[in-house]
Length: 149
Image 1 (cartoon, rainbow, N blue to C red):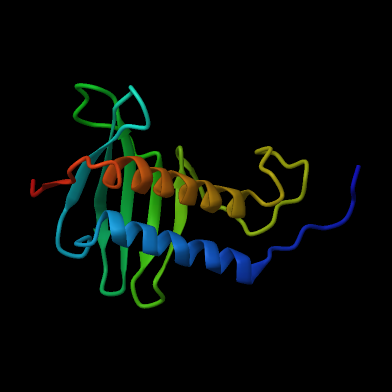
Image 2: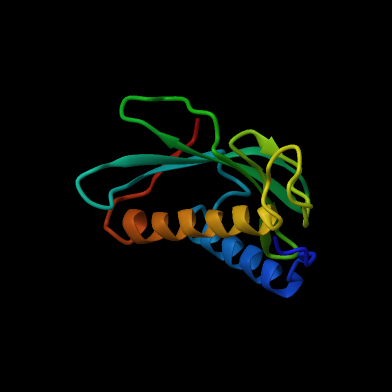
């Protein structure tokens, strides 16, 4: 077993979070004024609805929930909760599938069986999900539908 201690690559982590901010801005440009937005993502024959919903607003931050909705579903627990830092132009996952408080580094093994770089991995995964939404949602011609409820 490799006993070397993992250390976070902070410049890389910040670059991932900054890129996630830009992706969110493209998908939900009015997040400071609009309560939520819903759109379809269709990477093939399947169609999935995605909801980005403002859960909390502050003067410099917004907490957004990202949920995947099954057909005919109107509510869903957010898969991701994302803290958007408007002043720093960065976005970071604060919760993924009800798991919260991601440390920058974990010893391994640990009681929750998180990977050494769990925080980095969950933010990279958010980037992949957002990029997928941009590629197969907005870019595919599916109209974004703003919901003002």
